[in-house]
Length: 166
Figure 1 (cartoon, one colour):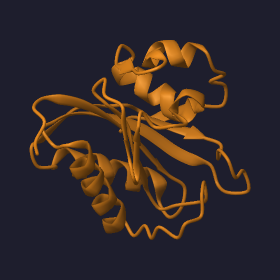
Figure 2 (spheres, rainbow, N blue to C red; figure 1 turned 90 degrees about the vertical axis):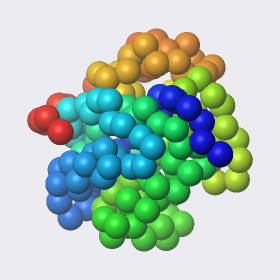
Figure 3 (cartoon, rainbow, N blue to C red; figure 1 turned 30 degrees about the vertical axis):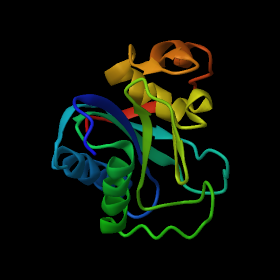
């Protein structure tokens, strides 16, 4: 079932292979999604790994979509883009990856179904996701945290370094 005109926020990250190229290609793929339009993309940011720190730095970005896709359908497309980039989900949490796409926010909705929780459950503590997202959607509603900009002001964003345009 399609949902009309929802603004969805997507987090992008990669730290294996050619991370900058992977993130840029994923942004192009997001712009080609059915029933969706890419409204904005952040700059690229370099950040240290989160969770498991024994891996290369990440390149992160955020995208803002206007979509008619339901959250589960949008997630399916994100997983397809990851697979197209060579990502194999091996069950290792917070490990290195060729491409990671996360559905961070879906309008002001909260979603909790098997395989999908929105807002993303760790978004409020991840500067690597909030900094690029605030660049393009600081006023976006973040259920339980006010807005994206308000959530960012509550955490330490040191170490999130802009490296170039997407």
